Every structure is written in C-alpha cells, then in structure tokens.
Length: 189
Image 1 (cartoon, rainbow, N blue to C red):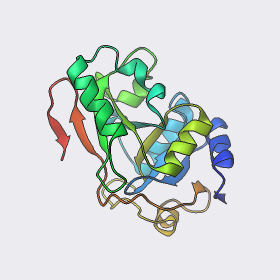
Image 2: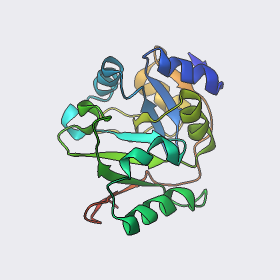
Image 3: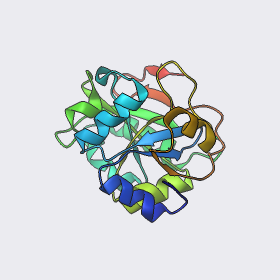
Image 4: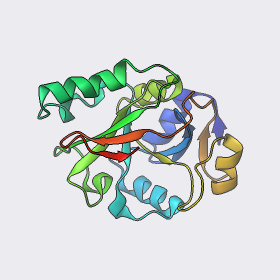
C-alpha cells in the first residue's frame, strides 16, 4: 500500500505492520516499538542484528519526557534545545538516553541506553502524533546499502508488499548525528 494519508499510515502502525516513510534526510522504516513481531520484521527486512538497537522517533517532547527525568538539568536543556530550536535545514540530533522500564529490551539491543529523537519534519511529527507516541525509526535500506532517498528507492529495496507513506524528505543532507547524553561523546558525527 502507498498512501499520503497520515491517518492511514498510523493505522498501519497500530495494526502491527511495518511502514516506510520519509524523515529529515533519508527514508526510514518504522513500527510500533511495543510490537515485537513488527520490530523483528524490520530487522529481517534490513538484515540487521538485534544487538545494534534502533532509534525511537517522537513528534513532540511530551512523548519522551519520561526519558529525560534522570538527566543532568544542563544536559537536559541542551537536548531539548537541539530538538526544539533546530532549523529545517539543520541536521537532526539523536540522543542516547537512559532507558526506563517502558522501553522494550529489543529496542535497545545490547545497550543500556535508548536512542531518541524528537523530529521537526512535519510528516514525521504528524505520524507520531496520529500514532499517539514514538515509533521505531531506522534507515530504509538492507545492511551495507545506502539508505533510500525516495519512495522509488525504498520500493526497489523492499517491494510492493511493504506499506509506504509517501511524502517529501526534509531538508537535511545527512542522517541525524548521535550523541551520548551521559558522556557527551559523539557516536555518529
């Protein structure tokens, strides 16, 4: 299925299916992070080991605030600023945050933290809000290949059996940088 309806795409996620959708810089694969079957389908599509973990994408700060409660206040403000004060062309930032008991083990992989990003991409924001929470977000590509940058490329990778939310990529040229909130270390520059 290919749709331009955010409501239909959110319904796909609620039904436990995988969805390909445009993000700030590349196409992503997403699902309900609490649906292990859907999550394992993403790993199968990507040929990605579960140990690596994935990013959770949120449409608004309130969807991830529970993960910020144990963060140093100065770092917390830096995280919030990177999510809320970023221009549409500026590269997105994903933060490694302490995972609480609401985060399924399969999302984290072999890590004690969870990777989280609050997006300013209008379609992703609308999708997370229509889904009423964060969603899995991992690049739409099999392991070792370049991430899809169009619906056509995603479809070439995964075929017509996958569900697609068609729309425009954001204005960022690169996938999000990843920073460890506990150490300040840049994991992906």
